[in-house]
Length: 262
Image (cartoon, rainbow, N blue to C red):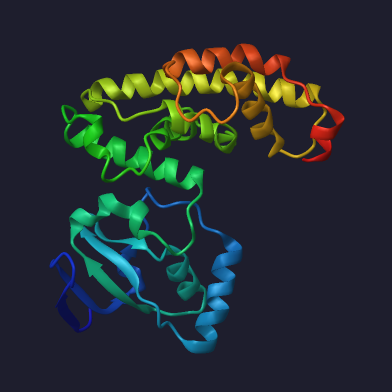
């Protein structure tokens, strides 16, 4: 690698390095989200106009340099024919905060859930006795873990997590049990979500709705039928809430006025 400059991060005080890195030395870890082809093309056109002036963030691991923020810029640089890019190399421990650091393309629920799952599995391998609640600083919301298990463990890449997110925020929580036990609990929660998803998809088809976002409206109405409107918290636990939803969703219907608002 070329010449690097070392500076101190002004708030936390850790050491970071800045310089030019060969593209061939950088890898994209599995924790990263899927690439957006359209974004890569836009960035490539920007690079061709003004050059590569926005450094990517890297960390040094046992596998070499991994991109923690800037994978789209990295791919765009490759398309533009660059062999080197500007980069900032961060301490390896910051890898666990990828969700907070990755601001290039606002991550959606699927992205955040995939990343949360990867963090969970990494710590499960390294320290299975660690309590899941200790991941709270690295995983923004506990339901990202449950949805992550749906998407990654059970390979349901098209799971409509957005439809359930408002409910999940009310009833999912970080577990005060070792990760080895939390893994089994997350699997159980994910399986129940998959069951409710199947019920939701059937009702969506029965109502002959056309917009996939209307699945959220079905779940919201089912929840309101059970618990009322504007409910901030519920006393029922995760399983009770979703079992009730599984029973209520097939009964959901909409008036003509409600349908016109979609």
